[in-house]
Structure formats: structure tokens, C-alpha cells
Image 1 (spheres, helix red, strand yellow):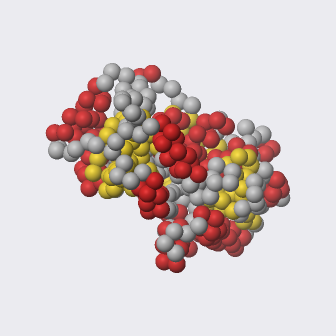
Image 2: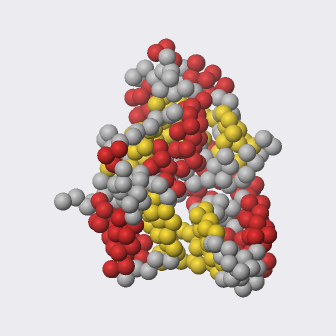
Image 3: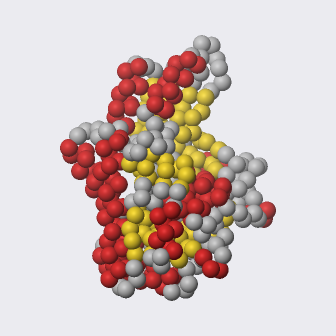
Length: 407
């Protein structure tokens, strides 16, 4: 924890908070308010609005499947734009600031493009700026690899940048600032009566993020837990109390559903016949070699000459899905099915499957509405069901009503 003589706060602002020049200047005023409370302020920013999507779309107008290295070079531009503009705004308002790219900030990653992991942070230049009384503005979502290549950190990577920087600077606290006041029990754009959650344990928040909640990034939460960094998820302009994420335990909440989240862009992959183990290993080696972040891999019990299996391909950070699908289909003709147009809805809460009641209730709720379930995965903190993407909004509302509606 920072000493009184060196009180550091790290703030991260998402793309919606800096989406246009007026919002960006409002963020600058909020940063100044924090600095005037006696803090040394380091700020991590995302790209403005939908800049990243526009850059990605531009790349795909040029080539069908951009190379991962060049795509990282391109997408890293978005955060560089917002960091420099924010620094300009602060300087214009009379509060000296200096902007830094991920590499200039000392964010060192592994060599995986598009979904890199932070290995360490060497924040010497950030410390020097803070010591000089400057506000340090850091480009989120990016770093530099051990091979001195620009890398990006995947969806929500600016959160991870902020947590890693907060740990490296021994920050007093970290604020994740967005257009909502904290973490809600469901997406308020779909569920009108979604409620703010005041406190979440690291594990609960991590499960929500992995299951599709976009308020915080799962890798960032895991990093925060390891480093002991408390996170405050707050509204940039709303002035609410937000949600605190930390080492919270409450036995009275065990078995209760805290939130319902969804993931819209997935492909459900299933074997059509049994695979010998060496073929399964080769398929997974191929996915690993392409840096594909598959999840919920489920291997059936061996029967006869092999195993059945299923897994999920999240599409948000998978920029070459067609290539992956076509290559696996070529290697294993008529042996793997790719179920496109699917999504997942997940119930989150510690001890959620302790007695089976929550699972039975979820299955009955969807079944009574005529929504087919194609697969189910459970863990200590999560119940996830795979359904048709067209039914996601309906399923989210039904499950929220069944488990979290008041009164």
C-alpha cells in the first residue's frame, strides 16, 4: 500500500467513457478532481468508442484473415489515439500530463498475438512521471513481448493493464470506470430490473467475466486476486458507489445466484464419432499452436475405440475462425460438427451446485419456455447452458426472474 507521502491511485476508463471529445474532456476533469485530493494519478485508457471494431473491420476489407502480428500493430493504434488526446486535454486544463504506450510503460508480455498475457511490469518511466508531478496516461490493451513485438491483450485487456500497473505501482486503490455504476445482476439493456451488486468475491467476478459479463476482464480479476488489489467498478459520470471486488467471504450467500450473464458469439464444437486419444491430442495441439482460446472442453468416458468430446470456441478474440474450422474439417473429415448460431447463459454464485436445486430449477425454467438446451457445464461458481443464440435474450430474462426478481 502506498505511503502517505506517495499515495498512488490508478484509474481505467473504458471506450464509452472517452467516446468523443466532450466525454474525454469530462474524464480529464474527473482525473483532476482525484489529483486535487492528494493522489498521484496513473490512468489507463481504452480506445475511443468503437474504434477497435472499426479498425478490425478495415483490416478485413483489405484481407480476409489478417496476420496476428500486423493486426496487433493496427489495433494498438486505437489506445494511442485516446491516450494522447486525454493528455492534451489535461495539459490544456493546466495539469501537466504525459502519455505512454504499453511498451513505454514497461508492460512485458508473452509472445502470443491478439491474446497475450502480461509477464511483468517495469514501470520506471511511469514512476518518474509521477515523481515529477505529472499525470501518467497509459495506453491499455497492449504491451511489448519478449521478442520486442507489439502485442494486444484480448477483449477487456485494458482492465488487465490497469490491474498490472496498480500492482507494480503499489497503488492505494484501482478504479475501473465505465458507463454503468458497478456490476449488475444482468445486462440492463436486456433485463429492465437488473440490480447493482454491492460486493463480489474475486472468484465470483472472475466467473461472471469468463461467462461473458463485460464490466471486468477475467484475466484482470485473476491478476488482481494474485496481487491483492481491490477493484472498485464505478460509473465515470454517475457518482454512485459502484461495486467492490475483493477478498470477500459471506457464508450466508453460499448457494445463492448473484448474477445471470451471457455470451453471444460462440461456436459449439462436438465430435460426430469417437476419436482415439492421439487424434484428440493432435487437434488440441493444433488449436494451441494457433493460440485459440477454446474453453469448456468435455471428454466423454472411453467406449470402444475412443472418446466423444465437446468444447466451445469464443469468437470475440478469434479473428481467424473460418481458417480454424476449415483446417479441422480437412484433418478430420465428417468427424467434427461446428454448431454455429449458439450462445451461453450462465448463473453465477458460490456453491451454486451444492444441492442440485439451482440446476434443476434452471433446466425447468428453460424447458417450460420451450428453449432447448444443447449442453450444460457446471462448476463451484457457475451453471452454464448452451442454447440457440436467438433465444439468449428471452433465456436471460426468464432466469433472472426465476432466481433474482424481487418480491
